[in-house]
Length: 321
Image (cartoon, rainbow, N blue to C red; front, side):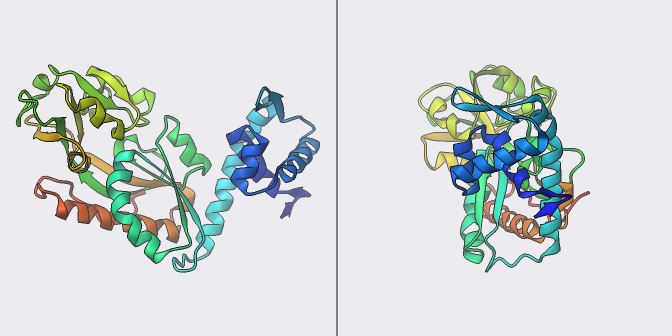
């Protein structure tokens, strides 16, 4: 497609080059041949009268102009994507759409695992790319690099709408033989343990105890920090260490490892999980369909949990501005 004499398809190649910094990786990601990507890069260089990407070892480093173009290009493609998806109804049975979702492994291990059969059963041709949360997650949502973020409400971007997904609370995870870990421990008592904590893409400005969620998981007191919840069990099993984790996840972990759950006696914040979409895609019927399945899966998890009276209350699937 051409606009004002420019082939807009070249911008897709440009965005992929900015992400992968490699002709080979860009070709693989876009399902193109390397000569096709090289040709597109040559046309981009000619149009902008700039090298855009220069070789540095095995990588292609963007020039100053490429860095300046990156933000506007991502925003333009995000706008175009939102326009195209909003213009067509979503037909799950025939769709071959790819959904890019950013979420912690806590959500993947619980909600997505519970929803995936229903999702792919209804829409066998779609693809779901699950990416970990990262520190610049707001930028990824703004640029359209991801379609959907699933994260605690207080970590969500302020300028984009959210769907309430589910609520959960926190429990203590410890080795099954750890006699010191008991029900009803206060935050002060918990701080007497060696703590292992998962950061899972928490923005830097929200670390250091400023966020109630960060404080609840005792991140500021951790002797070991990891990037995923799935890394916690091996660092706790057979030791005196503990971790503070969401209840839904703790149930899954205890079925696989010789660990136990202890209730927290002192008041801790609820974990209010939301699915956030780019404001340009607020009316995207495909994303609404996907979120609906995630809400249903979260509801099923609540009802099947051992302590259903204290496990997450699931919210209705409605969009919040």
